[in-house]
Image (cartoon, rainbow, N blue to C red; front, side, top):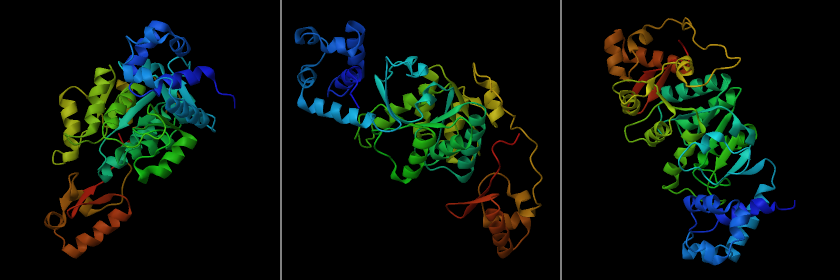
Length: 366
């Protein structure tokens, strides 16, 4: 495949060490497209580019990185989308720090699709995982592509829900596009590359580094018309994404939870500060600015009648231990254990750390 000289120029600028995104945008603003920047005399660039970066700009090291990246871009379903590309997502043009280019693997047309960010805790509860999957599937079927960060917990459940719906999912990586982190989500990443889209602003081979994940959060929120936080502790990185979304003028939504759960504290804090409380996908869709679902059947339904269970009736919705259940239900420990096992196998109760149990509900029920 013959290398695209225009793309090679974009890569030469973006892969030069020390030449950051803001400097690159200043160069483009002053001189035009990258080919025009590279055609300028060294003296003309010296006032805009740090000396070390100017020295590296035409180095063999950068040339080798450009060649390797062009080879990657020739692979099946591999794309590099630049600021000048008509497929560059319009929503990212609205944010303060849009990346000069995006590496993409999969269905690149999803970058043009209406989307919503769905984020939350890595150490999610069973109920949180269920909520993330159910909300994401319903929103995907309503016409919104699900954007998240491929992390464990809520992110992974949201991606799977997006894949289960009609509008698929986009995973924004905090590594190079050729690196999957965490490795436990390797199979999910392969599935997304086939049926959805992986994207990254970081060069090939960029490893997982702590500083890159908060940076990529602005793209997760920026790609969406809104941001839904499913479950989050007060110190969760998901709150950074939510605050970034608010700063970008996006709608922020949060699902409330138990007042006793640390994983609900972040959502409750967001709601107190103005995020919209949602209990169903319909709640979110009715509040989302500028979006009208197409061909979408409401998910709000009466809860299906469940098999009777005296234990479930006294369980409530907060985590509870076996002793408390024995006292509430008037049953022996053996009877409670047997009933809990049956309910767990039916997917109606989840076992939690510390010997606790929690009732599970379908998130989309009205």
